[in-house]
Length: 261
Ligand code: SF4
Picture 1 (spheres, rainbow, N blue to C red):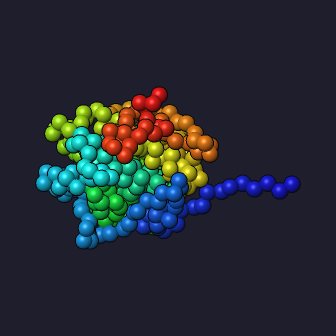
Picture 2 (cartoon, rainbow, N blue to C red; picture 1 turned 120 degrees about the vertical axis):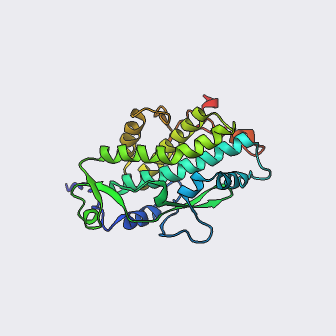
Picture 3 (cartoon, rainbow, N blue to C red; picture 1 turned 90 degrees about the vertical axis):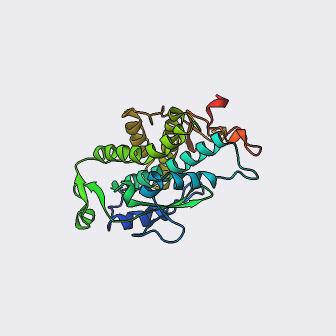
């Protein structure tokens, strides 16, 4: 009898090649729109400007819409932060799970295309990244190298915190939503995003290990890594916080919501 061992493909090219692989992947009917773009095209915003300028944050917040009517402000704040968290977690986590590479997550390297106050797409301005020692194509592309994926995970945790903090504090300072709740909601988004990455790159075991490591680092974003499976046997993250969709006329309780447990 012949046995086959599934061998993970070696990554090729620079971070732009990784982004193309991520953007071409699909799970649960979802894809991530991630691009390479040195300067913001029409309709795009530089993340460092957005996060540093009250008028841009206020304008983004004002664009949040519900299905028919704009929800209450605290619901809009929750959705804006969760969308941001999903976008940056999807970018960082997918690159790490797909190719064991991490793009430069500094706000000055990131662009976003807002859509109705949410993040419709993200883009990286440069090819800067960190990769594992031995990733020849990444080294050829000028990557910084680290010895182990845990080092990439540490950098990812720090990068996500840096990107999330200004928006969460913006909402908290205006009394829109408790800061602690928003951090935990961001943690829920990160955990669910890594479920997606595990499926999209057939790396469920590694994605779970990465989730447990990131949450084990503690801090404001840490939530319990609890999962369940749907009727098709597909895993999903059981949230610690509720996204408040049920507070809108069109919303209901979902299978992941803590309210229902
Ligand atoms: S039940 Fe689920 S979708 Fe509905 S508000 Fe809670 S977390 Fe959001």
